[in-house]
Amino acid sequence: MIHPRKWLVPALYILFLMLPIYGLLAMSFKTTGEILGGFSFFPQQFTLANYKVIFTDPTWYNGYINSIIYVVINTVISVSVALPAAYAFSRYRFLGDKHLFFWLLTNRMAPPAVFALPFFQLYSAIGLFDTHIAVALAHCLFNIPLTVWILEGFMSGIPKELDETAYLDGYSFSRFFIRIFIPTIAAGIGVAMFFCFMYSWVELLLAKTLTSVDAKPIAATMTRTASSSGYELGLLAAAGSLTIIPGAVVIYFVRNYIAKGFALGRV
Amino acid sequence: MATIRFKNVQHAYPPPKGQEPVYALKEVNQIWEDGGAYALLGPSGCGKTTLLNTISGLLTPSEGEVYFDDQDVTNLPTSERRIAQVFQFPVVYDTMTVFDNLAFPLRNRGMEETAVKQRVDQIAEMLDLTANLNKRASGLTADGKQKISLGRGLVRSDVNAILFDEPLTVIDPHLKWQLRSKLKELHQQTGITMIYVTHDQVEALTFANKVVVMYDGAVVQVGTPVELFNRPNHKFVGYFIGSPGMNFLPCRIDGGQPVFHNIPLNTAYPVGSDLSGNIEVGIRPEFVEFADDGIPVIIEKIEDLGRYQVITVKHESEVIKMVVDEGHLIPTESPKIQFNPNQTRIYCDDWVVGGSSNE
Image (cartoon, rainbow over all chains, first blue to last red; front, side):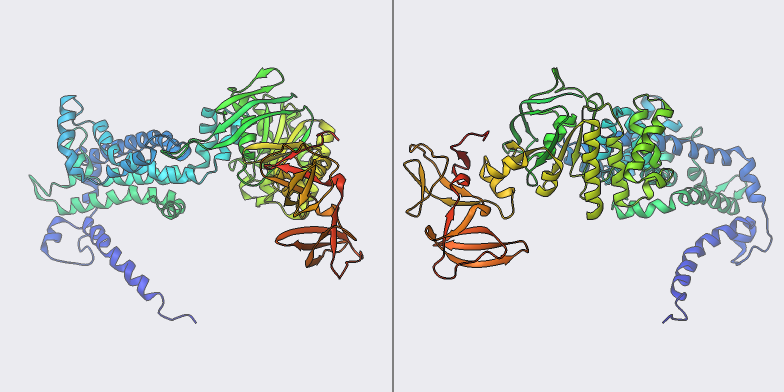
């Protein structure tokens, strides 16, 4: 028997989830005056001016470019470092392997604020302050352990006979790893990259502390609520709406694999 | 093509912390003749797979050397040993088509593409994979995948040996039989050394002309199926080969002949009286028969298996199994049994004594 109002609960749930996003989106098409004037469900004076400012003013659009640069650098570093590490954890037994594997996870147990000061001092001392690589490296502290955990789960699902067969068939380790193993765990790499991307994209504290002008991320730009021209709430809403898009695009590509990652209990 | 020789090969896996290493292989000295069809038979965990991996080089033994002809290959990497190996569970390269999977070992050795195609077609034909050649390997069923694994093992003609590690476990019974005879046929055509690991005695005895029985990390006997049946070197071989397995009864020795519960028995292979240790007499159920005179027994159970029946009898607390042809009369009153002296063996501490190994 199909209940006639079966759709009601999920529909309400989605409605509540979408409400703040709708609010943000609606605000981004309003003028600041209208936002401050009172609540309206639809924009009374529909305007694209907020978006125009973001796409023309370098202090705004550079924020996006900076964020994307360090997120990409971070994802590339994390995955390329974690691949061999995860392979070692999944295939070899060595002294202290289990302790080390767990210790990786403890890196995620401290709040980023704990590391902000030492990073700031270190990067200032060696001249990395306010560069993209500084933020990317700082995020590695959290992303590499996570990536190792995710990839280890996927790799352990591949029988080691695959490695052995490749050697028997005449492949060296490096050729096997690049030509056979990496394509085989492509789904896992996709999931790992997604999580690196997500974490690095939304992290604010370290990114803000370690940059000032040249590498300032969009999230830091958005924390200024007022400028010389007064409140700019419409502009902030537009910036916020745009910030959601990259995440939505990335999750679209890995949507089929995410569930597998969760099933492995590693995400 | 080469004769594979094991010299004092031993292997221990790294033990858990604070424990003594356990040897998975205990001092194996073994020669695998070029062109032989060997079956490696033994219970799970007796070191069969470890032994195979030492041949293929996936494992470097902790002690001893492995030779291919006169070349010491102990430290040679797997990719340079020219060994093909098929594992128990299917291993396919998911990202490739069936054709590319089969062609992979050939292409890696720089074979010309026309020759590759010819060879792959031939193997695919043999394994009934022709219709699937252009499909992606990841979409196949488990036995389809295992056929690819088999094919990849068989496709190279330049190998020193092909090792099969229980390759037909995931295959349907009727197909199993068919593939096994194909393997045997291929062996006769090519003369490549094949080593076939199994724990199924029927599989071993039908495939191989030499059976290597392993028990607890050691090779306990090498021989033809008939030799293994007639003269098990070790109690384990007696139990493991034959159905039901060999009977073992405690005894003492008097004048070179065994005495069981004060009943003298006869053997064609007398031993010295100075034997010490745990002495037992072994007899296959096929060579136990009812007689007018002999060991008095009580009949416990009769199982009719068609052409023959298995009878379980008891003398005091000792259980003896016997195989009797269908229609043979079973005495009802105070039955007695006798052993065929030519098939009665004496075992001391699990190993056979008396008689020579090449009868």
